[in-house]
Length: 585
Ligand code: CA
Ligand code: CA
Image 1 (cartoon, rainbow, N blue to C red):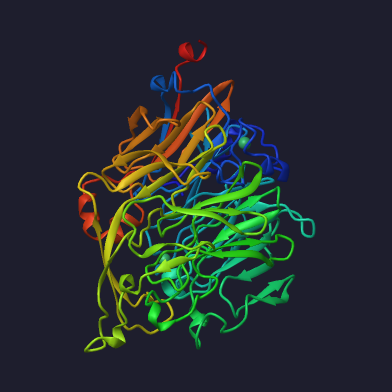
Image 2: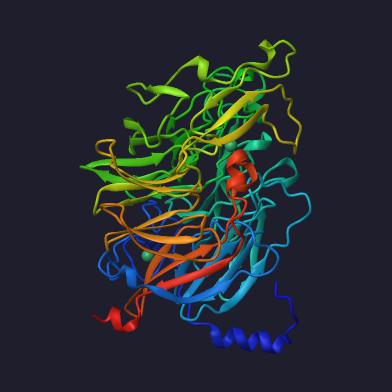
């Protein structure tokens, strides 16, 4: 909310003057988003999640000339991690910010059109900073999730609330930070698809689809076996089979949070959603695979049924959430997906049936598994799993191990990009490890449910962050850009042969997509943990990123957190382009 009082007539006047005409965002706009360069109407620059734009006006030959066009401050005392990906439609940019805020901004001037503040209650339980990762556009609405586990649909013109729906009880640990996904369905029309956050609190992960007009639930699919799904207000089918891969009652508070949201492939008509760690972290309490925790699921938008599942870390004992985004791409004629896991392995799967094609490490020195078998299942070494506390002398602490990667992952939430030009994935990753041990724990609603202690530590002297160019056809790492601090921002690739990403040190960088050479960098004044976008306006190519240091690393990073303690917080939107005289050349 604005901090000063304007007269009602002044507010109305400013809205009337600054508003361009807004056409409804259609399901075709969303399905075709990757190809249309004048707008960005979905998270991932297309629901497939490639984060690739064919725009080539800014390219390897001239990117060193781009300059800021405008900036905008998110203001206030709420300068925390800004993990948003902006959306752009009809001259208006929509961004979300820390503490569940949203803005509409004039894309020509950077002036604020409206701001919405969710005004959060006391006692919210976000695990990993008060961040938000972006909104969804549909029709005349812009929709996002809040830290008190609600979905809010706003009128795109005015920022006024159209509807608000509770996902679940924030006092039990539920929250929401992912960008919602819009998908088509034959049976129900376009649907709003979301998950839940709160995997560290023993919540129940699920995927939900809602009507966009009013937010009413259409179907729900729990991600832990034994729980019942719903369709049109009645029970549908159970996920898996009760107690098949979970002992006793632990599945009732089993986690598997769907906290990063999903992607959608219009070709196979499947929703892809990842699931987080099983709860608690202490794996000795829940022998078995613990399905569908640490997995990728393909879900039918028509009824919420699971078409296939692929589990990356069965019986996870390291907090290797399997939530990371599933990106559709063409692998020499095979309908494939690529996904870079917290556990340090990159997986290539057939997206029609979930069949494992190949998997390979994208970070160095992995210890938790010896490798992957022919089906992509990890080969465990029991010596590298933290010990059972009940086997210790006093029963209070199991044997400690040093595991690589750390629980913050070979890759965490920050989205990868795929370029159909180079046929490479660009993976923002981190090379670090952790001391990890297990402790006894019992479930209590609204309390952290881990049963583990940990300290994250660097493993190299010269870097933690690594941006890697990964060849999904061979498993080769084509190039690596090292970074001192852990990388925590998303990646964009373009038809201009460029890869854009931000660093905690504040730089937005443009690299040569083929070689990894840094061609341009600009310091935005605070760390970048958001995802850049590019779009076209009046014949010019623009690049936008939101800057503002924060996220999980300063809160959970152990010894690593000390090394980034000097980085300054912020909250600024930055937009760049070529100067007019150069753009014309
Ligand atoms: Ca587009
Ligand atoms: Ca987790």
